[in-house]
Amino acid sequence: MTTPRPWLASYGKVPAHINPDAYRSVVDMLEQAMQKYADETAFVSFGQRLSYADVDRLSARFASYLQRELGVTKGDRVAVMMPNLAAFPIVFIGIARVGAVQVNVNPLYTPRELAHQLNDAGVKTIILFNGSTPTLAEIVEHTGVTTVITAAPGDSLPVALPAPAVDARLTHTVALASILAEDKPTDYAAPRITGDDLLFLQYTGGTTGLSKGACLSHRNLVANTEQYKAFMGDSMVPGQDVIVTALPLYHIFALMVNLISYFALGSENWLVANPRDMDGLIQTFKDSKMTVFAGVNTLYAGLAANPKLKEVDWSHLRLSVGGGAAVFPAVSARWQEITGKLILEGYGLSETSPVLSLNPPFIEAFSGTTGLPWPSTDIKLIDDAGNEVPLGQAGEICAKGPQVMSGYWQKPEANAAAFTADGYFRTGDVGVFDERGYLKIVDRIKDMIIVSGFNVYPNEIEAVATACPGVAECACIGVPDEKTGEAIRLFVVKAPGAELTGQAVIDHCRKALTGYKVPKVVRIIEALPKSTVGKILRRELRDIAPAVAALA
Image (spheres, one colour):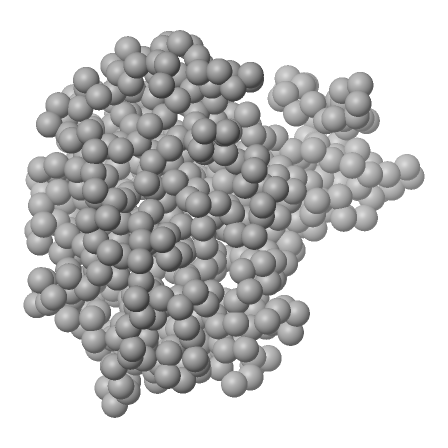
């Protein structure tokens, strides 16, 4: 350690270290919460409430089904593909209780994206929202999936709610509602789970165009929860917090912060299935009297622009946390003007469970940084030669801590490149520390694009777009966007004699890519800028972008 760690002097009452083994597993941590807060409300969904005792009973029932009926054992991968329904936490805790590994899947994925993830993870059982069944039906024959469990909005709730029909092409599906019925057993043989056992495969974009599964253990998530508790201190009140979860639970940010951390502290969690309904979300703010909200810049910006936000009583709000992408100063200023709370911006990755740093709750002004590294987290900035840079200079952010993954699922070559010789995870982001130890992200080494908090890797978009008839080659970059932080701009070189429009390429991409990955603008150019060895120079594309006319 050649450079001082200045953030430690800025901690105040925050401890420098946490115990990542405070609980034997995430299951142990959540079971203690279900016993301690049994009579309290755990989740509110579509106006209906589930107590911690309800969650305990229903998740045990689901665990029993997985083990008794399906033969799911410790280490098996089980996919979950649904929005923020009450069924999500029930299914998650049930999977964890039998020692299986949850593979989180975006319910808006295309058939191509879904097939890769299911096959890469070796999934045999999938639980998915009824509305996503047409996607699975397209590719299920090309996967190892043998059991399909369908989930509806009313599952686990005391009332029936309208639900989409299950795609008729999927035969022999099992309704989650039937598994959770009152006459079903709740006993199962709890396996011995340790901190080293896997809890999640969290898929993140790959440099080869295919996503990789970050292997996140029980210890990783226990550690990140303990770090959050230690860092936030009195800003979290066990048994009294109310959090609104608008971010998707299949995303590691909401999964760790909103679900695991606040459940472990006995909080009341209002699940929002459709955060795009801004009026409905604001009504949830009014009804819930929330104390905590976590969002990405895009969501905060949309809310701050809605005049109804001023109608909310904000006297209960204690924390506003932002992650996934950079929070714009103007957005935080507008949010603070309306709610009285600035947005505490943080930084993390799927590979780090996810949080590495956050602005502490005692700051009095928006810092424009991602805050201080968390307890038990060491971050060093290195140059191209792997040497640690002096304080105040920029370098690649490399992190070590109990929340950092063990590696990517079955990707030894990627793992070798992902870590330094002394065991630090290489984030691919470039940062600089100020004298107080606050970390600011200034660049990215990887060609990753962040759209509304979601990682998008150019290689994947380019691989899909190149398959479009008439495309000879292409390259994409991220460009600043007021709504989404960054937007995808694709540059295309036509094949000789081809008739091609930008809209045709966009339409082609929509068939294979989920919405946030689809290029917003396609520009047709004569040739891509390349190095002498033929490598596409994306930085030059950013320079020429304003001068090239867009084709719609």
